[in-house]
Length: 396
Ligand code: DHB
Image (cartoon, rainbow, N blue to C red; front, side):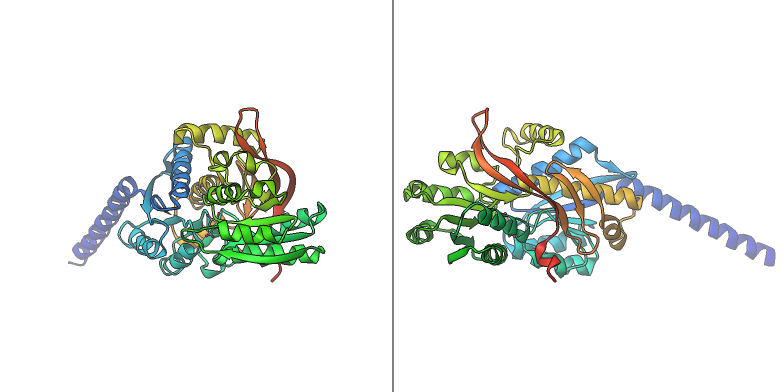
């Protein structure tokens, strides 16, 4: 009896082991690791969604869809730039689809809405556009491959001081990143001896910049500092020209969101001479970037990449590199640990993830809009500030 029971137990144990091995094998073959990209594919910010999707797919096309023996599946969800949608989609991606990564978040309020879901589900959420400094502090599962507005705003403030600009009017979108940009610029410009005549804030939704631009011009500043989110700069420039302000002698400066490479060509000659600080230009002269621009154009049907595309391409790199490091383990804490301190070459230049803040450390370039040999407008980089950390966090 004793022997028989012992044998049975051993046999059942062996069966259980075999069953576990079978399910593991089945899971291995069937369960792709899902990456949920939440992007504005429709609505006013659709160009940003297109950049995200094209870049994420391009990365997978170039690097294959298998990492550490696991298939990677990209699921693109359209939030139309509306935070309530993004929150619902994040929940669905995590609960129904079993997504192991969330990515995207085109606007700060979207990232803020998704943060609690990432925290609860312990799923890494890679920010590939939203730029308000504080976002990464809202969840230990946030990692950012985009930028913070203070990174670029402080650097363009220094440039303005050093280049004889004494009086400025600031014009920003009236929401968190605009307020971050305004604060960082005004404080730094003042510290350098500059004077801000007025700080204007324009509503984010359906903005009419014309009255604000006129009010700014009436004060006769040396320069107008502008922050608007990616894809809105074209309207600013159109209304600037319609008012004849391109003949006013007011210099246009800002963060590079304003002279976004995706729409810069449509701005025409009025954009020539605008000086901005930013992390990426399609004209960045590295070999890697030249190849990236070429591949992106082929993938998008001709449109060139802007910073939104590059952030998302790098976001996919982070997914792949983290999974390689964990050997395919999708435990959220292990993935975040793997991402901390990770460094690599991006089409924008060398970048890394600050192990303390999970925010990005990157070069910020000062650029001037010029017409290239191909007749297109480019942000031509002429000064580099290396390995810039988010100044807002560094000050804490
Ligand atoms: C944000 C969005 C943008 O498109 C951009 O260029 C910068 C910041 C944001 O909402 O945080």
